[in-house]
Image 1 (cartoon, rainbow, N blue to C red):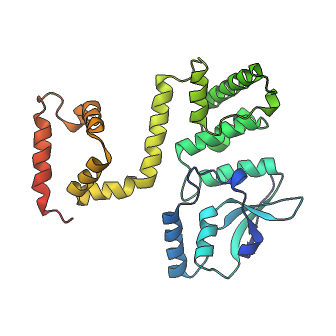
Image 2 (image 1 turned 90 degrees about the horizontal axis):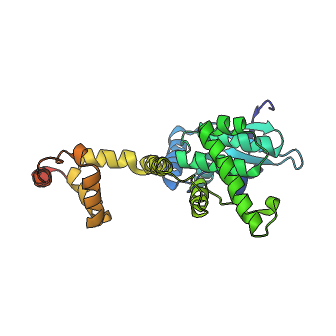
Image 3 (image 1 turned 90 degrees about the vertical axis):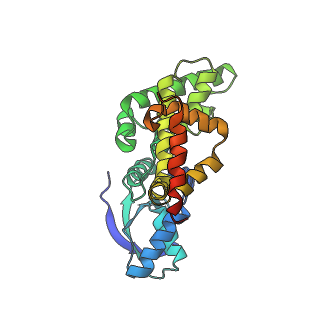
Length: 272
C-alpha cells in the first residue's frame, strides 16, 4: 500500500466520484455539514485532513473520505488551502482506502451501509474474502453467504440467456437477499431478517436516536405524541404485543396501558 503524504490543496483541486467512493446510502447529511460549518466559523481553522486519491493517469485528486468536510468548506466559502492526506495508488486500492476511511470517520458507516459495500466488493470479483472482511468489518460468514448468493443470481441470469460477466446484480445486500429468496433459495432465514432489522434499527438510531432520546427524557408527552402521529393503531398494537414484557403490562390484564396513560397525563407540567 502506498505511503500517504500530507499536503494542502485548494478546494477547486479536489474532485469527487460518488459512484466509486461515496458509500453512504443517504449521501450528504445537511445537519452534519451544518455542524462542521459552525466549527469552521467558530474556530477559524481547517478541519481534519480529507483523505484523497491521486489518479496516476490524470494526476487529479479525488476525495475518498471526507465528503462532509468538503461540503462544509464550500458552504462556509473557505478560501484557503485545506489539509489533505494523499494516496498515490491504483483505483482498486483506492476503493479499499475509501471504505476504511469512511468506517473510521467521525460519522461512521451504518451496519447496513457496510453490508452494502461488502456486497458490491463481492460483485466486483477482484477483492479477496479476507480483504472484504478486513475493510468493512462484515463477518466472514456473511461475506461467504454473499458469494453464494452472487453465484446463485448469476446462474439464474445465465439460465435467462445473459452472459455471466454481463449480469447486472442488485446494488444492495438486502435486495440481493430478497431476490435470492424469490428464486426459491434458503438463504433468507429468520436470522437474516433479524440481521436486517438490527441493521435498520442501528441506522435509525444513528439518524434520530440521540435527539429522540433527549426528547423522551425532557418532553416525554411530546415524544409520545410524535410516535402516535407516526404509527397507525395496528402498529401500536403490534408494538405493545412485541414488547409487552419490557413495557411491563404483560400479565396485568392490560391495566398497564391505563397506568401508562395516567403517567403521561401526569406530565402536564412538562414544557412543550
